[in-house]
Image (cartoon, rainbow, N blue to C red; front, top):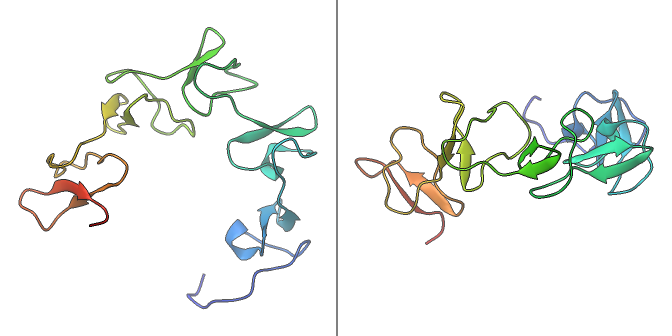
Length: 151
């Protein structure tokens, strides 16, 4: 992108990114109509985020405590264990590169491959740890600490 605002491309026009399409998404190099849950599809890239094309329809991926299949129907929230999506506790082994949200009350640390708790307000965030939703790492403090994003 060159930093210049342009009108989005119409349905059927060529694209290399969904950002180029107006009210649609880039699928296989063309702006394609956005599909919703349970709409007809031919492939998962036509479906909304956290959905896959299953038996011709965009189906939501399972979340915590729902049925899953690690190969065919993976969890969006949790990890598939014994055909159920299960959220991992702090310290649980996770895959930081996975699209799924594996941890119950935290995030998957890229360096350790373990679930780490989000930081609360006032906690030191200088080591790159992630503040809880609604908080930001205020680097104007020494050391940096988690503060409310607004206010």
